[in-house]
Image (cartoon, rainbow, N blue to C red; front, side, top):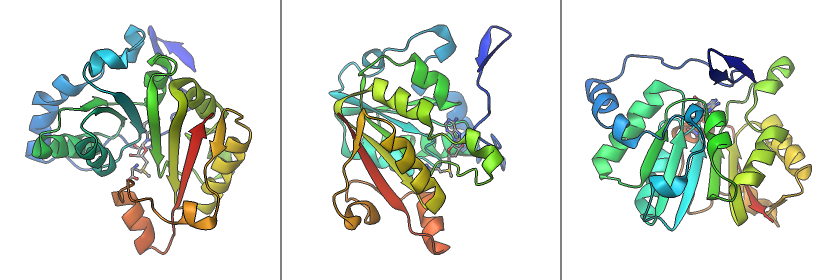
Length: 232
Ligand SMILES: C[S@@+](CC[C@H](N)C(=O)[O-])C[C@H]1O[C@@H](n2cnc3c(N)ncnc32)[C@H](O)[C@@H]1O
């Protein structure tokens, strides 16, 4: 990590493009009208208090890299007493989540449009009940492994953010990334892997909806693993 022009630039960059095709007109409108209302304060401005974002919420959950937002919107709709924070640098994903929030009239969603890492560092210790990282970018080449979201840094950050008994959920359809996640989890004494039998990580739990990326993986013949780690 580095200091540039007074703002922290996170190196390496973990994500690829920030945009593919132009936003649909409705999504572009929502970026102007709805995003400013849902945006989490800029983490470069200092610590962020999740209770100030969701004064009524019983708990706050974070999704890192929500993609098209279908998992986040599903959780928000079924858990109205929970505040959901989503972080995503890909503008088309943010546009899609805004449309879902608008369609479903969700009032328990806040969005960080950008790299999740500065947000993670600005949130206080023991402030979250769950963290989701679903199908993180696999960065398959060895020289790119340093770009993987799951890392010793990430496990340490998740251990700081989650309350005791809180959950870190990671999904991946890439075998090497599953092994990588389990290896880093084994080196993170603050977490225990909750799986007791193969079905616990091979079968999608009922409160874990399918994401767009997961559907694509299944279509291409890759079975996802659903990993749940509990904060001790
Ligand atoms: C393979 S996609 C999976 C998207 C979604 N979770 C799903 O399952 O459909 C990985 C996502 O992580 C996002 N991402 C990559 N680096 C990130 C970072 N540093 N902070 C937040 N999101 C990131 C990407 O923009 C992308 O949307």
